[in-house]
Image 1 (tube, rainbow, N blue to C red):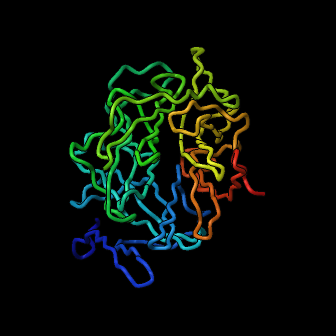
Image 2: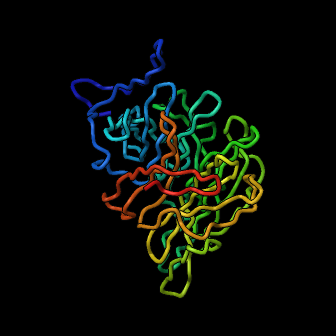
Image 3: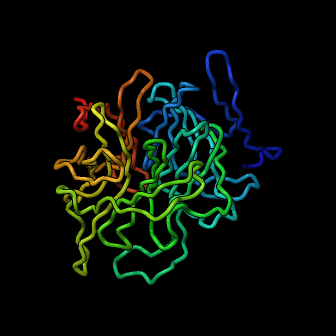
Length: 338
């Protein structure tokens, strides 16, 4: 934290009242901002029942407890999904974390009385010679952190290592619980394998580590709408990004995920033909959204409406904003409400 006459410390505590819990965080320089003015890429919103508040998470540079610069995650809080108060620092990467560079796609899940932050961490260390016209081969992986409430502070498990394999450029891990067993679905980066994949791996009951090897669910090129990207050397690559699962009102298991359709960022839908997370998975023909926006996730409002949020446009540099649409669950698929 910055000094302002004395050293300010981040104090996060939970106050419980007769009508429910309200999470209160002491934090410098918070303000109220309209959703249209809030810059965010890969937005993730939690509708927290105990506090009857919505929390939006985004990555940001922060100060750790010692006052040093760190990569981190901040939260904004809202009662109406329109005006948001923040930012509140909920996570700062420990200086001894194995990967401690830029953070992508933070998301928070409530599970067995705790809250878990899934975050993609990046390193500037190159572990393999870069291919011409490709991004650098650096360490990139999803790591899971835990806290007692949605405002953190989120802490690493022992070892402070990513949950995804160190020899994979992996990103965008998300949580799915099936028959009481926790799983993580994550993306294997196109930079490393050209045709990106969705991967499934089982987690320990406390989410501290993975169990066994991962299972490839599908490749990005399996979607009829995913057209890929042509590189100067003739290589055609396909992106997998932003996976999130949803069980429909008729019991179908769907996954929304992002890739490119004729150069425009889009959100598609995959369906498990067995209703199980292990699949097999087939791709629905048409994307849910294809107007240069993506990395979506779903949540329910406190009055029961199903909502989709994602960033648009897909243009790194400060133009991205969180879009929020109501979604209709038809039982077979998802459609945006007119």
